[in-house]
Image (cartoon, rainbow, N blue to C red; front, top):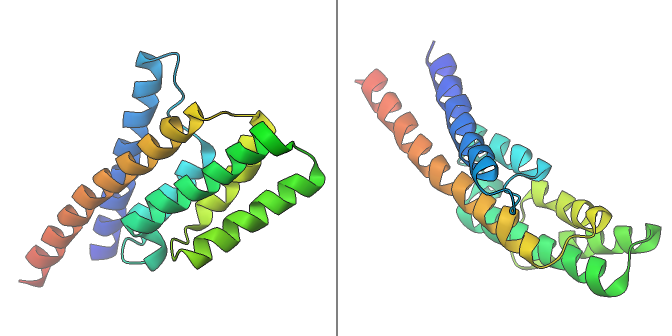
Length: 153
C-alpha cells in the first residue's frame, strides 16, 4: 500500500510540474516551455529522486551543457548525420567529465539540431523547464518524506 501511495505522490508531482510548463506555454505563445526530454527527466526526478542522475545539479547542468552543444552545432557547425552523432557524443562526454550526467539530457543535441533552435531555446524550455522540475521535485520529495515518517510511526 505504501508503494502505491509513493507512486501516486510521484505521479502527482510529475503532473504538477508538466502542468505548470504546459499552462505557461498557453499564456506566452512566443515561448516554448515543454520539450520531450523533460518528460524523461520527470521519471527520474519524481520516480527515483535519490538517484545520482536525478540530483538538481545533474538535471539542470546536464540539460544546460547538452543544449548548449546542440545550439552551437545547429547555429554554427551545421546539421548532418555526422554532426548529430558528434554533438550527442560530446554531450555525453561533457556530462561525464563535469559529473552532471542526466540521461534525458542526452536527447537535447538531437532535438535542438533537428529543430534548428537558437539561443533562446536554452532559456525556454531548457533552463526554465529543468528548474521547475527540480523545484516541484523537492516539494514532492518533502511530501514523500512526510508520508514515510507518518507510516513508520
